[in-house]
Each structure stands twice: as structure tokens, then as C-alpha cells.
Image 1: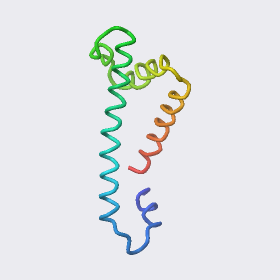
Image 2: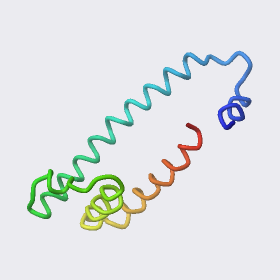
Image 3: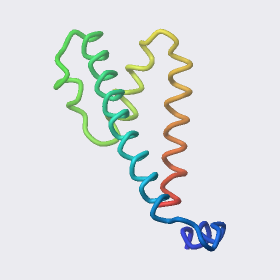
Image 4: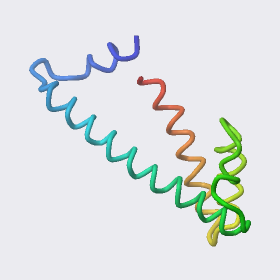
Amino acid sequence: GVLLALSSYNQFHNNCYKDALATSMVNCMTSVLSGFVIFSVLGYLAKQQGVGVDEVVAQEGYGLVFVAYAEALATMPGNVFWSIIFFFMIVTLGLDSTFG
């Protein structure tokens, strides 16, 4: 399917090992960075509400992304900028699932 179509753009003697290592490293760094960002935003929301982080994270699944995280972004300074960046990230995650 999609992976075969995308791989047809590679050169014949492409170094796939180097590409796999680079993809793995970028994936790991992105995961660590997103963990720091998510938990710092949830900590910010917990401080704003005056409750513990465990009470903010009580929502599971989509509620955490579209309710708790969006509520935290709405209370931040520069909320329009952060909201645009957040929903752009959601769109790129949706596009990325096409390639996986």
C-alpha cells in the first residue's frame, strides 16, 4: 500500500539501515519531549484549578486530549497561539497515521 508507494521514491542503493536508525532516534526524542510537554501542561492546569494532578488526569481517552488539554491551553497566556499549534499537531498526527 502506502509504504510501497513511498519507498518507490528512494534511490536504488539507499542506505535503509541509516534511515531506520534516524527514524528511531527522532521517534524516541519526540516521545521524551512530548512527555515533558504533556505533564507540564497538566501540572499547570492542576495548579490553576487548585487540585492535584491525579484529579486533572481522571479523564481517560479522548477527554484528556480534547477537554483537559484544551482547557489548559485556554487559560494560558497567548492561548490562541498555543491552541493553533496544538490542533496543528493533532492534524499532523492524523496525517502521520497514513504512513504507519
